[in-house]
Amino acid sequence: MQFRGLIIAVCLAQCTMNAQGQQDHPLATVHKSNVAVPAGDLQVEAWKRQQFLAYDSQYFNKIIRRVDRARQLGKQVFAREDSGASTACSHEIVYELGWLMSSTADFARIDQRLEDLQYSLDHPELEAKSAEQHCADGSWGECLTSWFFKVNEYFDRMQDYRVQDKYTCPPSFLDSVATPEKLTRYFQSVAVSNIAATGIDHRREFNESLSNLMRLILKGLPSDYLFKPKLRRAMLEQILPAFRNPQTGYWGELYRSAAGNRFVDDLSISYHVITYLDGDISDWQKSARPYPGGQGSGLSGRLAGSWPVPEPPQYGRRYPVQAGLEAGNS
Image 1: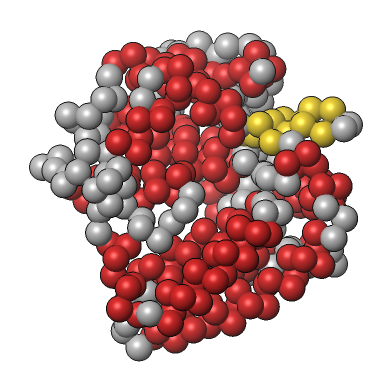
Image 2: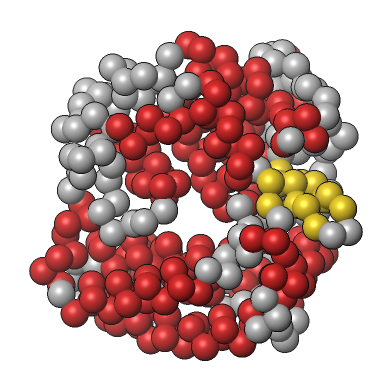
């Protein structure tokens, strides 16, 4: 199976969330290996499922009804890929569906994306349009509807062109995070989730956006755009410290519920932050401790052996840990 097909398979597996227990949960089904998923990760996922049920008592029945159609459409995408045909647009839709069906209870949007996928498969001549830059706002990912996935696609394209730093159209779609105030407000909006109240788990968007915007801003890509020193300082001195657990040193998502607030340490988010800072973080001893279990996206065991922890002399004090999770998320 091609790499793109593997990605789609993972996305579809993420859609298969039901009420039958961890053996049918994405964390248990996506990563079939000898690596054990930490009990803490599974407990967090079970808690999230209960929060989705609190939002919509028919959540599982509704999601299961849509999984079968997503799988059938996904099989068509696999078949197209196996034949060597382009599936660029369909791939983007399936990728977004994986997020919508595992992290939201937005069934109207899920249904629309399923219809979009059917339309894309019915019109293969349109598959290649996702490979073109959308000059109205400078983004790539014509078949994506989520802003943060467009940021992900944009970063991948800028990686391709970073030597010459060329692009066809200015990325005005990034204007919404182009000042320290806008950037801070955006991250405050996705670093906190109240699933029972909104039907959305923002964790995936927070992870993707922090990873990609960090690299764009810190690398200054594109060089003639608007990522200025003030934005870089805001990322390093305000945003990153605000969303870090001062007790464990891990970054993660804050969840609100009727029972209170719950900060969930996230191995994936923390791995990305430490990697993209080249290990240059304050209080590095905390992050070097064994992962306590929280939200690892099934990656815990695989990342444990490659955790980016240089020897102590390589660490600096690039920014201070600022106490108060609530202060950063209020």
